[in-house]
Every structure is written in C-alpha cells, then in structure tokens.
Length: 296
Image (tube, rainbow, N blue to C red; front, side, top):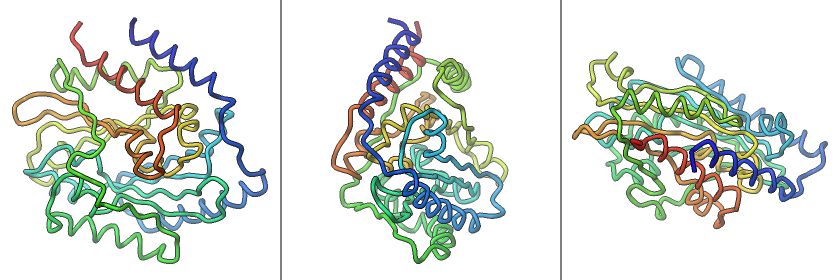
C-alpha cells in the first residue's frame, strides 16, 4: 500500500471520528475564555519584541476554520540564534527538537482560566542529560517573558518523570541530508489536510556567529482538523505536538535522521491518557515519514 493511499485511509478514519468530539462550552463561555487566552498571548508577544524569528499558531481558530473544535489554545515560538547555537555546540543535535523557545496560552476543557505552559530549562536538561550550567542563558530568556506574566496560572511539568530521550522517535534516512529535506517537503505538500508553517536552519544560524554545526533543520507543519480532534480533551499538547516539529539532522558519522515527539507519550505525561485520534496521528506520522525516507 503506497503512502498516499495510507494517508487517505487515515483521513477517512478521522472523518468517522468527527462525531466523537467531547461536548464543549457554549459560544458565550468560549468567547470569554478565548479573550483571556488572547490577552495572555499578547503579554507573551510583548516580551519578545525584537526577536527576528517568531511564529504564532492559534489552534482554536484553525480548528474553527475546519468546522472542528479544540479549546482556546495559542502557541508562540521565538528564536534566539545565539542561545540555540551555544546549546547545540558539542552537544546532541536532538536538543534542537526542544528549541526554539515556545510558550502556550490555553484553557482546559470547561475551564475558566487562561493557563501558561512553556518548555523549561529543567525539562531540556532532563530529556537530554545536560548540566544546568549549559542552560543559564536559556533560563534568563525564559525569565524575561515569565516576569511579564507573573500573575498567570502556570502549568509545570514534573521533570522526575523525564528520562534521557523521553518520547523522541528517530527514523534513519536512506538519503543524504538535502535529499531527505526535499523528499519530506514533497510529501508534506502532497497531503491535502496539512499546512506548511516554516523551518529553522540551526546550522546556518550558528555559522553567522562562528559556530560549526552539522546540518540540523527543524520543519514545522500540521493538519488542523486531525490536530483539533487529538487536542479536544488534551489542549496542552499544543506545546509539544502541534504543530508537528520534525527535526532533520546529519550526525557525526554522516548518517541522516528524522526525529519528532511521540504524541501519545506527551498526552500520558500531561493527562494520564492517550486518545484514539492521537494514536491515529502517531501511526500516520510514523508511516508517512518511514515511507518517505526509505530507498525503494
């Protein structure tokens, strides 16, 4: 069965699941909590003025555009190439999966509060077995944002549950780095429900400040309708799993890899459950990437 037929079958399964979305609040209540989430996101954006690379994704409104629903949820990324490059220098390229900085303003189903989630230095240190001293600059940048939202409800992650390489899926490519990137982009562009959001070239950014890195690039894309179903009862996944963050890198031995976050592992971490739409996305993503990176 080829990649496109598999994608079509999975899309059909998502369509069958459309009636399983959990009931959500009435339009007035949703509008009120959405306004709170918007206000929190604006505070975040006010703290990152001046950063060259920024990306904001409004999961709730993208879902509405697809006649679907997820609770109000907005993720904002911003990048500091100097910080990224110094963290990645002489360390695992997999760290780039947790870069750049990202903050999620969201509400839980039925909730009345806007909540802030972010990728902490402690999480990165635990997931990649790094000393805290390597993440001092990262922590300082985080604090510059957190200081402006100090009255917000913050959702923390218990890092005791995070071991080395937690929830990282790696797939080896049969192709060189540039061919791998080209094939992945062609595949992503061919999926009718998927949107391309952008990319970050860590190697190129590092070169600008005199740091040498092996080829390392983060591809950002997503499918709003399946994503809405997967986030319907688990909106904090908007921090780590939506949009999809696909890291492509060439290791020291010349092998090329694609790596991404395991959606069900993060759902279990945050909510002690993994839903059927999440398992479908997990299966679809692995199948799509594996088929794209295999030599026929």
